[in-house]
Length: 299
Image (cartoon, rainbow, N blue to C red; front, side):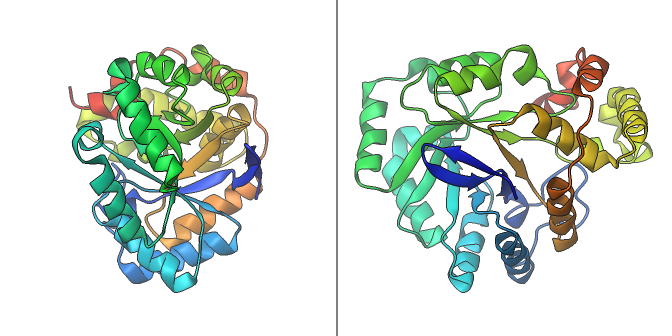
């Protein structure tokens, strides 16, 4: 496993995203929500393979509670990042934190993120005081936000209260490259978490199984398949290698629907081959947002 040094702490380059532990999630997910025993098996395997960071959220069903049960059973104390919506932050921040800590069976969150950027353009001193109070009380260590737009990223990277920014990045969604997000974050000492490496599973789907609402994606998916063949690697390795090659100082989130996917993803990551990223960038740099942004799917 590779690691990132962030302010003196050593965090695994791979972080396990846990939305599937609390919800039926992903356009390609056919197995549904995992049960507690399945989660325990996955968490044990992930920990045994030196992954020490986990990403969850209040909106992921009972993911926090399921995770907390696993960590207690396995006597694990990893880096935990959770997220909450801006409206919850505004009205129920302290109660929400208490609830998350209770569910996760821990005394402190390593990271607390806003699940959206709605408050960024109205950020004020009262918000800062509340965040600093949580840090002083050691209920959280770092604070951040999960962004969706360029405007949100620019506001987040200039916000001194924000330590972590979670961004979407994959072969279709190249805003992080085009708009220089990696360099800007490093200059401001912000840690980036990369989500949507497989775009909710779309990038790994068989083309004939892609739903009608994403018909426009099919030519690009075919092109991705052809490039993976040219590089002589599987599609999932192709997607992960592209992201890893360009997001060198960032944490990469991955999810799994079952233990076999977890094993496959970790094995692939530990044996990644380099690819010619410029070829990939040129092939997909002009994709319409309706394809790479799940919020726009079907609209």
